[in-house]
Length: 271
View 1: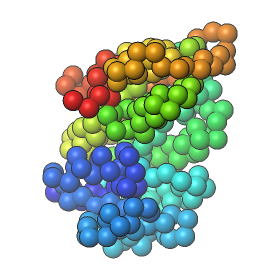
View 2: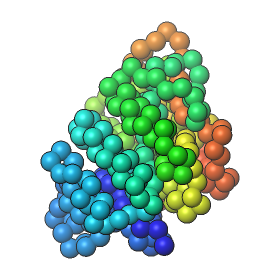
View 3: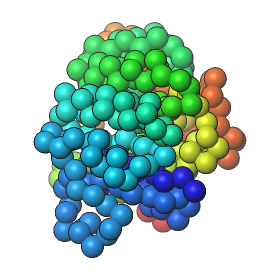
C-alpha cells in the first residue's frame, strides 16, 4: 500500500484530498492552522515551512507519495519543494505538485495544453513555474504536475465568496473578456486518486473540457444558487478575448473522470 503524505492537508484542496484518499491508502497530512481540529488525529503533523525543515518529517515518515497542496510564503515554498526533490531522488518516492493555470497567464490568444511552454506575468505564476521547471528535469516516474483552473464546489472558497457578496449587496468582479475553464473539488480529488493508483506520470490539466467567459460562469453559478440578479462589476482588461484555460490533450483521463462546466455549475449547489 502507498504511504501518502499531503502537505497542506488543513487547506481546502488538501483536506478534501485527505478525505478521498484516507480509506484507500496509508494517508497522512500536515497542518499549520486549525490545530484544535487535528490534535486528536495521529495522522496529522504540525508543520511550519517558514521555520522547519521538511526533511525531518520525510525521513521519519518515509512516504512513497507526497502531494503538495501548500500555501503561503512563496520563497519558503520554493525552498521546501527543492528539499522534497532532493528527498525523492534519494528514496523510492514521488511528488505530485498542485500547480495553476496561472503558469500560462502571459499567453492570451489560446488555451494551454500540458506540454506548452509556460510563461507568466504574475508573481504567483512565476513562482509555480520555478517549481515546475525543477520537477521537469527529474525522471518521469518521480513527479506529476497537476495544473488546476478555478476550483468550485458547494463549500469552496470561491462559491462562498459569491454567496457572501450577494447576501451583503456587494458587487462581484467579473471579466467579460476572459475565457476560462473550471473544475469541481470532488472531481479533482477523484482524478488525483486515479493518478496515484494507476502510477501515472507527467503533466495533467485537471480542468473542464469546455470553455466559457468568466463573467458567464460566475453568473450561471449565482443563478444555480438561486440568485437571479446578482450585482456584477464588469472589468475589461482587454479589448479582445484573452484565454486563461488549461485543457487536457496529451494525458487524457478516463471519460468518467472528465468534467464539463455544467457539472461545475451543478456541483456548486448543496442538494
